[in-house]
Length: 118
Image 1 (cartoon, rainbow, N blue to C red):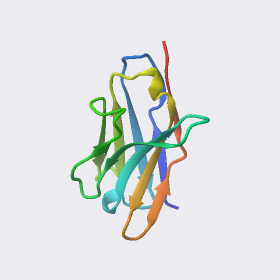
Image 2 (cartoon, one colour; image 1 turned 90 degrees about the horizontal axis):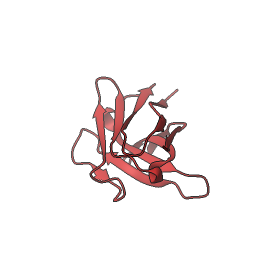
Image 3 (spheres, one colour; image 1 turned 120 degrees about the vertical axis):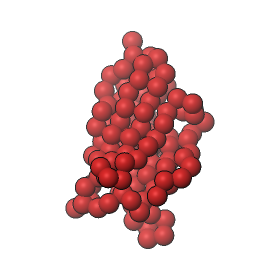
């Protein structure tokens, strides 16, 4: 029963900060690249951030570079997305993803709503 469960979403003011967590259970994230995606109704799901398995350099969508930071804690089997200087355009459902390209293992969280509004 491999699962990813996002938490930490909700309402935040423009310019504010929010930290999302994604807790894995039923498997270890150590061997997985971890990703955050987001989607707004009527729009395609978009890539947000990625951190490779075993650490390494991270990747970010241009729209969030300099504002968002992805991190992982393998000991806690959890990844995070620190979101700073948030904009209304960041409003979306955010999804956590675990991916192992070599084995084609892929696990998705159920998504969590983030709303940026004054």
